[in-house]
Amino acid sequence: MIDAATEIWSESGWAAVTMRGVCSRTSLNDRYFYEDFKTRDELLVAAWDGVRNEMLGEVSATLAERVGQPPLETIRMTISMVVDRITQDPGRAKILLTQHVGSSPLQDRRAVALQEATHLVVAASKPHLRPDADETALRMDTLVAVGGFVELITAWHAGLLDVSQEEIVEHTSRLAETLAERYLVHALSVDDVPGTLPS
Image 1 (tube, rainbow, N blue to C red):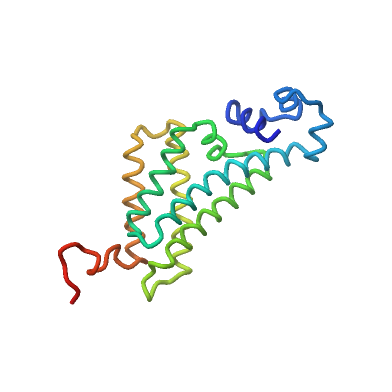
Image 2 (cartoon, rainbow, N blue to C red):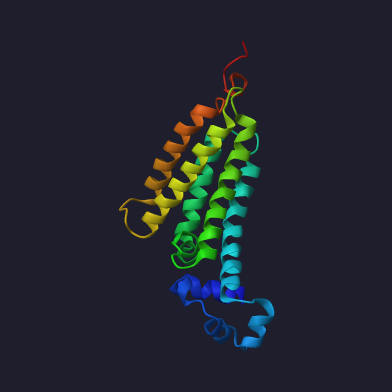
């Protein structure tokens, strides 16, 4: 039923996800619906969580694969991956990006997802922090940056910005790198730069 709800949502928006519509899509009667979900909101939250988990799982995997690598490269690669997924799957992008006015549970889940994404970025930054970095300020700035990124790609996905995918990646990466310079040590140490010798 979650798959059916996700399909309907990606096609027609969250308001189109109804018990009757999901049962029709799955060829099941409402008894099966209420065996799994007490309310429609529970189904919507389950569908949202599934799509959210896919995206955050990919972000987490990208960050994990890049442990020990130059952080600025990791930032750009992660941004590029997210924008690419949004482009490749507009249906799931609709689920992740559309405002859920009228559904408190979905608005709450969107807020939680923003905090979770912020936590992932902050955690990935920890090994690269400057010794004097203010971690509270880092978390606040990261929350602003992640929220701004979400709003930017939401506007772009809605057709409100006439820019290319590459321009979105370039612009956000540049802003992220500016922020990173405040908190992170240099991406490469002298030992890592080809053709140089340690002092």
